[in-house]
Length: 449
Ligand code: SF4
Image (cartoon, rainbow, N blue to C red):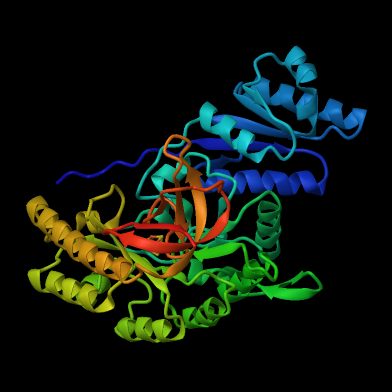
């Protein structure tokens, strides 16, 4: 049996100087880097690159910043400088010509790009939350917002808890502050990510923090509601929830979708449907009534899009288990489905399990799931022809004059797209209502309405 060895994520050391505002900037940069698959290094020696976030408010602060850069160069040698002293790049270059890159305060994309260049991220489907293509810098109009790190579960095929430890949530006020800054900088869509979004805040026992004169609990529902308010009365900031497990309290975010605060979209990694396989996978929220709950969610929010991923060929998966999965998918009629063939990963308990499924059987089952979900997707998208949809424009093609965007049912990189023949002056980040003219298995085609 082939066992996949995991690449080591690059490590970033951080020296953050100056005022609390600078600290928030550092936090934001590190959150983005963590979402891109980087680890933090607590010391110079273990870092692949050191980021020095400088302060240039007073001469003494400048001197302290220069000393910090000098120390990082001496101890590690691979240094990226950001923050207020970035305005005085020539002073830094004169003293430290070996600095890899210098960017100014709040130039988040530039700092992250410099770190990507100094220590390129190693994409791994087994540990990354952000889709591989998303590892390129996300455009300003959508942003991944990581709300926690690690996981309290121990799924048999997964090595995340081993690598990242148990769940550690970020404070809700810190998440909201970061989201506010992202929105102020032009973000139109916040993609909430974590290993287990429904478990957000359990490590804080859902304690509340002050936020804008009120209190916000470290809880998925509270956080989702507050994020939804960032768009103001016009509601033009989309909030999309990823990696939601169907714990009972997920029912409480459905009304937020009905109110328009959160997108009618749930990304739930079911991974299988057969109770036997789920038990052996040690999956959380393994609830036999899940189909019933999806039905009830759809009654409350008719345009709810549910996306999920499934693993086929898990050790011990029988023909009956697989038939059960196909019948379940036929009934659930999920909007988006991704499938993976089980892969033995170094360190995951399932790697040593008996009854590994032969590769040709995995391949057959994979193809069957993909064919079924393509048919269901084509039927569901076909039913949208003639309707009007809100679309967020991602890209405009200068050559063809067309544009590509996404409806509320489409997350970037993993779901389908909406293609417009004529961009008609639209630009990335614009929200537009379109009339759907045509559909295929994954995408929609339309014109501005
Ligand atoms: S819920 Fe399971 S699959 Fe997801 S990170 Fe935790 S252990 Fe891994």
